[in-house]
Image 1 (tube, rainbow, N blue to C red):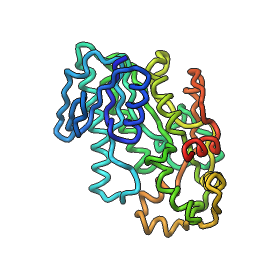
Image 2: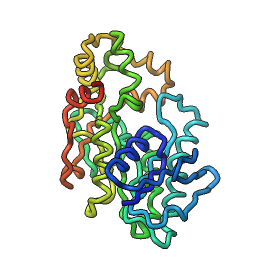
Image 3: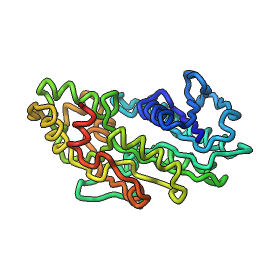
Image 4: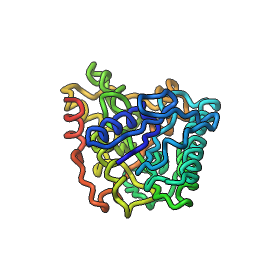
Length: 297
């Protein structure tokens, strides 16, 4: 199988590239910084070497500037939108024009689509979007894939939750604090964390390239989300440290800016992978403690 991975230098893109190559697939990395055997694109200028995408079985789009922990100035919000919405629109339109388009287009999204919801509300792929900048960004991000879908390419929207990895993402900045005994809940700790282990994420992405009946949104989350309070408790137990230092909401807002702190750090949701499980995918790490012990060794 020949797969193009857009954003191949990021946490998810690199992990997926390595996983696919280890499984014997050919990977064409697409990034702003050219990689061996790959191609360069410049979405800000509308530049993409379309010829190298001809004949790929799958294209996986993981491009996008980091949501956190940067402050959401108006300029940075424009960068977030351009790196997701405009870049995805360019890619989808390019795929739609190919003489030999891919069979499947997997395009990143996020559980931020659902906005902030109370933890008792269980969200699957049929749940509607939430409110706020991040939710509206995800709605636009997903809609930008429409040219590919209209061209008959099976399009899958990867609504990814916080990914557990030592190399980056949600977990990496927390571990040093917890090792020092400075970890604990953020805000009231009741916000949902719809986490997924990195190993399960890459396996799920590969699985979806061959699941011909699956299209549209798919929650890439483990089947057992937790509150941030529970997440902190389990992480502390795995690291054999206390989890008693709570970060008050007003401190978090002061450090990271009100909007980003409120929508990313103090908000959450309980998103479950209904469609992924219906498709027959089996998680290696369905429980948080097992996932953390695997990730942290």
